[in-house]
Amino acid sequence: MILNEDKLNSQLNFVLNKIPFAVLMESYERRLQFVNQNFCQLFHIPLSPEQLIGFDCKLAATQSAPMFSNPTQFLERIDEILTAEEFVSHELVELADGRSFLRDYLPIINEGVHDGHVWIYYDYTEARTMEYHILHLKKFYEQILNHIPADIAVFNKKHQYIFINQTAIRDESLREWLINKDDYDFVKYRGKDSTFAEERREAFNQAISTKKVYEFLEEGINREGAQKFNLRRFQPIFQENGELEFVVGYGIDVTSLKKTEEYARQKDIIFAKVADLLDVVVIVIDHNFQVVFVNAAYESFFGIPTSQIIGKEIEAIAIDDTSIIRKDIVLYQQTNYAHHTAKVYQVKDKYGMTKYFSYSFTPYVQGKAGNVNYAVFLSDVSDQYYAVAELQKIIDKERRLNELKSGFVNIVSHEMRTPMSVIQSSAEILEMLNDADKISKPQLQLHLSRIINEVKGMESLMKELLLVSKIEGGKMVFKPSPQNMSEFIEQVIAANFSPYEDGRQIVLLLKGNEHPVYFDRLMMTHILKNLIENAFKYSSNKKSPIFRLRYHKTGVSILIKDFGIGIPEKDIPNLFKAFARASNVEGIKGTGLGLLVVKYFVDFHKASIHFRSKQNQGTSVLLELKNHDT
Image (cartoon, rainbow, N blue to C red; front, side, top):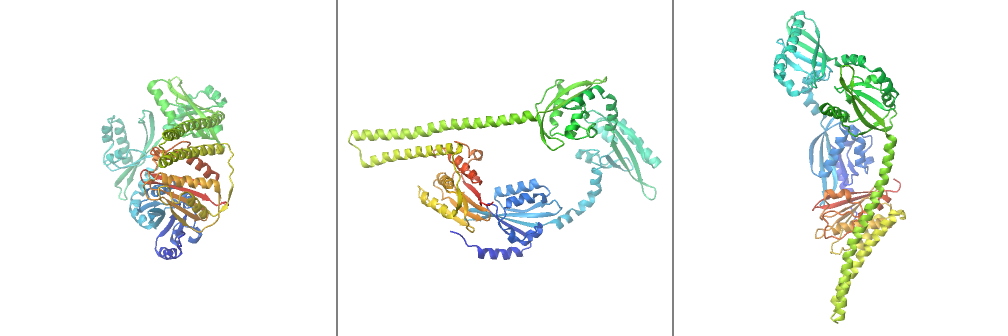
């Protein structure tokens, strides 16, 4: 029956438009059924609520995702909530424009069926702003200092740390430990020589005594054991009465500048000229994982000047996953053997075109100092890659054909052997009883019924095999026309499932305003018969399946829900493969071809089909069919 919801909708509209919250209701298929004016105002939607009715909420969410601070997380969280089908209360949502919302979610359950979704949003911006105002004031300057690309520390009169920024010490626990301690404590903690602590103390005292900025160059070793240079300054800050308040210390890493000078002196002119003549991209990396040379092919391909990469660490190379290069270098440093990791990089050239580069690297000794450098070679293998990809497509197609043939042999040998055995057994029994003149009418009827049922089963299998063959051979003609979908469904159910063989009747629900739907009658009959048959077949001794047809502006959606054995999660990706059946259907007849044909026919209609299932709880199949003009 078609439900009249006008009166209920009128009452709901009055109430929901008066509450001070943004409310959106959508159907199970995610079609917008109601939205109040507060929702349009909250999200700056330039349309009225009435104009939004019937919109695809999944598409709308995707289009509006950039409004949120983390679009990907926003969409993934919606999917998690819809999958869980559980109430959600006061979940915080951050927007890209700085606003903060609280969100509630309520699943709509109607007659045991999940019928839709309700979303409620509250503007939490002002409250959240007040909440963070004090923290913002406290951390404002600290955040600025933490993001300055220099080592910054603040000392008290005793040369003890009272603040250290993240650039100076990345380890948060170490930064906290060092507060109210000095460099002598630090070197003792690290087990290092105290020389540099003494030099810093002397520079600190010089800055205080001269009341001026004191600058010095500090040479040291970084965590990787490489030489490091820092230009350090101490700036004393005095109060108006001349008393020292604190001292600001800051340092700038000038290692790259000094190394660039050294690299310029060591650069091999002959190697550079030869490398610049190659079509292969050449990148030279030193033992500290810094780029010391790139050839002309690099700049020609990527459009990036060499000056922007020389002296930088290998992560500056315009390719993804430079960890492969780093791992190969580390492995060579540990084993003194040039292992080679096979890798093909997918990169964009300076024109934005996708290219494929194979990677290789070679260690070599550079200069009189005997330092080991590493030459990385990137060769354009795009033509070979595309050729291999085409070949792989051919191989995959051949593999699928072989799987289809193998599956055909297995299914036929299995599905034919059993019915033939039953037919032969029944025929022999009838022959024996007839010869002995002891055959009775019930015995005759029993064995004839067995023979007829098995013949029908073999006939059904052969029909499905012939149908698959006809589709695969491109001989299936798609003939859609505008038809009354609700009448068609009632006819299919009446002719085949009224009632089902176990006496159950399917529960039919029709919703929305009827309109003609374009579909191929023969194909749609096969689709519905298969899906309804499965709903009954795999829910034996359970309550009757539910069939719901819903009309909406852009087409129709069909939901078939049973309460049977369900489908194991690991089997769902294989549902539309030839001869594939779920792992929990033992003892239930089937060929593994039904859903394959269904998927073919769904694709003919340019429709979509989705399964949602929980083992031992049932399965829901959603078929969405668009209008002809969309």
